[in-house]
Length: 247
Picture 1 (tube, rainbow, N blue to C red):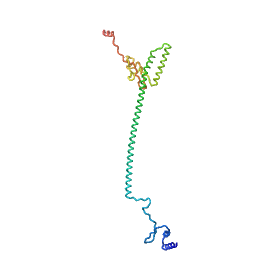
Picture 2: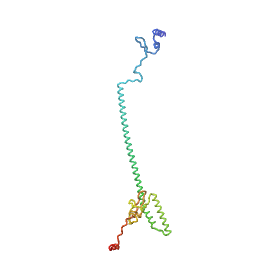
Picture 3: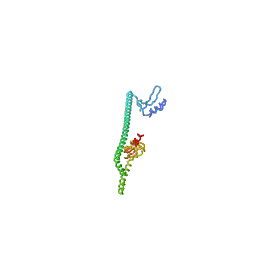
Picture 4: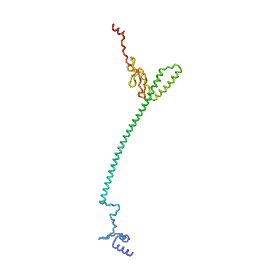
């Protein structure tokens, strides 16, 4: 203690700062730098290599950084190429899907049309097989004239069957033609007789011999008809010829 007091007194006489005194009195070591001009206390200088977070680039680290950049660039280029390849594959798949969808839609429409045509053809064939039965009913109604009550009962019975058959055909879309008085149409009519007359224009349908039918808006069976023909001039008789010669 006496030595410390003595040192303090000496320091005060020499005019040294209080910090130097405290540093000399403390137990922790401190570096005191002195020079020609006097004593000066400085703080310890830390080594630059020991500063936390500060890095020093060396040639090796620069080469490594360049190589890392090259690897990253190559990886990005490879990924970009993969993306482009996948995009091309996606476009190709989309185009293929659109073609398949269009082909399927065409196939669906075609099969639907074929199905409808097949159903229509089957219906036409079936109805054509039934039309002769309808013709026989109509002939019977036109020619048979019931005279007694029992005949009238039979007549009404088969006429009831005929009416039921006609109603069924109507529900299927069958409708009869009415060609009398119309102009002959080869798309609808079949001329089986020609009758010379001057009462109707040539080509007029005079009579329907066998009834024709429509199925919807298409011809199911052509009507067999008698068509008007121009009336020919009658040749002169022998008496007319003699009278002309005498004159």
